[in-house]
Amino acid sequence: MIKILIGLFLAVILSPSLIWFGQSQHSEEKFLRSKEVSSEAVQNGYVSVVGASIPDTTLNCPLIKVDEVEKPCLFVDQETFEYKTSSSVLCGDTLSSSYRVIKQVENRCSETGGNCEACYQVEKDDWVSVERKVTHVPFKVGQYTISPTEKTNFIDELQGEYFVSSTGERRLGTEIPALGDKNYKFIYFPKPESILVAGLSLDGKIESGGDNGIFVVSNKLREATALALKSEDKIAGKILSIFSLFLMMLGFAFMVSPLTTWIRHVFGVALPGLDRLLSRGASWLIYLAAGVVGGVFWLILFLLVFLVKNILIAGILAAVIGLIFAVVVRSGGLEAMKKKIKK
Image (cartoon, rainbow, N blue to C red; front, top):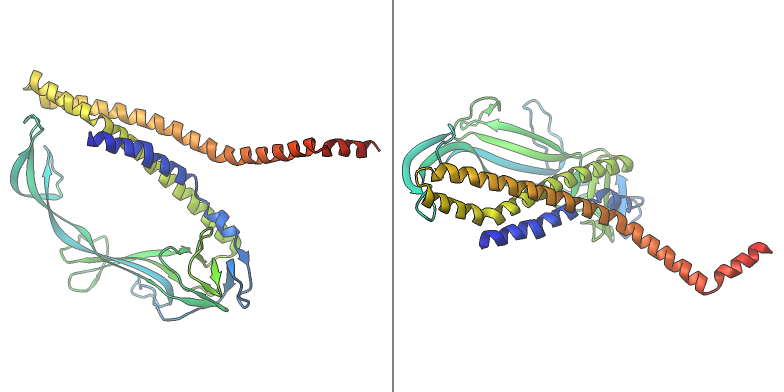
């Protein structure tokens, strides 16, 4: 029963919500609503200013290459990974060669006591995230004070990484890692000569985009920034749509899960020698059919949302125009206009 409820939640609530949000990415439109103002004259409201940035403090960009020259950054997101050994319990007939078997533990079986799988305590060496540090530097543009946050959209961020051995030496990422090695990954925004900022100004302080705008920091001109945001909208919409499809298919799989349990029980009683092989095959066929049905249902829902979001505005405009026309006709304004034309 719990699996059916989870499936209904995924297929009826979560997946449709993601479809709607996927078709509701309007960063470009919000940005273009910002009013272009001079950086030397403070105005309130959703504004965009352009000028030289003067940071409050110094934040150096990461030196991805050893021979790089230090340069100032306005934002640095650093995540540190360490090559470590982790332990877990896995069950099944085959294990990946990347795992080392420590010992065999208690088998995992179905509720009826059949379909048992061998389980093992295993170890694996892999990169594990151990620390993340995000730093934003407040800065001024003319008379405006800008305080970026994690919700700030930095246009043209840079990415990079480098590796350090357990002895503290720089190493290439193509080498076979050893325990204790570290991998530093960065997302950062170097301070440009000229910067564009769009956000909600309150007495010259910009700390967010407000309720109806977005907080943008860009090293591009206004038109190029709008194009970059449009591209981000398309990518975000596609990602949300694909994820919503996955959740829809997963939801249908959860809803048919009790059926696969019943089939395993039937095969376990009727054919105890072949129950494991036959029940697995039947279960996979049921899951495949559920996934196909879920995909078809998602496609229908996707088209409905698309039609609603595009027709709704047109419908509202048509209704407003029809209402105005009806008011004009009822008030006799149309007849008066006809008489004026005849004269």
